[in-house]
Length: 561
Image (cartoon, rainbow, N blue to C red; front, side, top):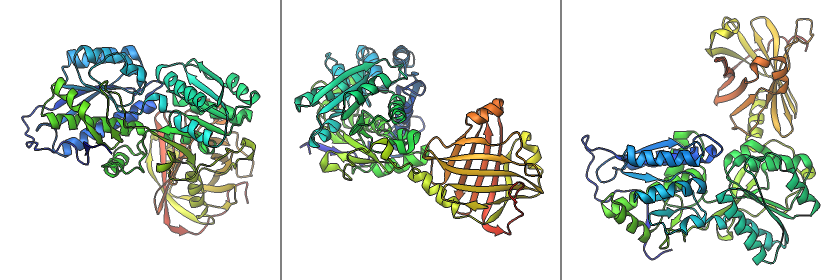
């Protein structure tokens, strides 16, 4: 705790005059990577800015004025970001700016903000070298990049592991994060088997992973800005049966586990923030973020929100938007935002936030480092791929159990939404779904459309996920030519909703519909919806079944009498 600590439970409520319609909003310019290879992180950060805007305005604004973010898409590209910040400052004349996502883009635009003497709070840049160039108006919020893999090395050292490999994307932030891991491992007396960089367009990681196997690496530390790289490495390790005692990454976001399902288990990752912390204002932030964006906030969203809080606090303390008073206020400020502790040295370099390390356990991020903040014991060692359970992720298991609970029952349905392409089904007088048969790994649900008993939904547990197939039969039981289309749920989804994009078999027999996806959705306790969407053509249909009122089961479907 710092002697001058201030807590931001509510932002900018210090003797602020009431808003009037005549007051022009405070325009805050920023870019975020809404598209491109950084879009997962950048979109979340943009959401953080937007929610902070909403909260500040709801709480009275700043200097008697509302704030309004102007967030432009830099497309994950440095040249685009530079041009857009010039546009925001020079052409649009914004009152203030906030930083983009990541070290690479922050390094690119810092000369622009310095030239125009604009305070630049960087929500998600962590590379120390950015703050070693004499810049006056740039402020760090994240832990330094060199600490992003420190938790992994520390936990490995505590467990007596000695053989470490460090793999890094060849970009500004990952190089700094990997260098920190390399240096810390050597300081601890560990052997760094290799420390190598790969080009950011890399898709095949086997050359490095085969070395991990052949050189008996125990700990693989990976630094990257692209989430896809982490996912690809895990998928390729699993496919090649390459095993390590510990695998950790420089970033942990929910999309990692959504993409990998059970394969994400046991992986470690840096998270500068988690919703279970007791930072002031965190409950409101998490609840409102979920409500507004229909997802849980990542540390990228919290970092942007907390940075916006810092800007608001500095404006409230100084009563000004002028750069020099704001700069001095931020240099002196020691506080805790929704994101975490903030204090900087004379460079604007973060000295209070050291970060967290999580482990994926049962589909959830669980803080395991530092020990004083740990929510659970580390699950160690990581079992070999051949020894791992191949069951469903928790959300999928909950969905499967809910569907199986309906076994033996039949329910009437109706069309709740349809486009003309599906007119044949839309004209039906009666729709019935019958949860006919259930086993541990299979659920058979015939769909009866009037007297037509040709349609069947077959759900199976396979390869750690749920597969939906459409089985179509003639009255004599023969299978139709167009049958067995559907796909696997690519992510763990929700306990109430699973989505099934078209698989390769579907693309082969229905090539024009290779972008189809189907879904099953328990919209409430008494309603199950089935739907199909064909994005390329804009066709869709949604069926809704009343689970509150079971009906007598119909005759068995064709081919299953």
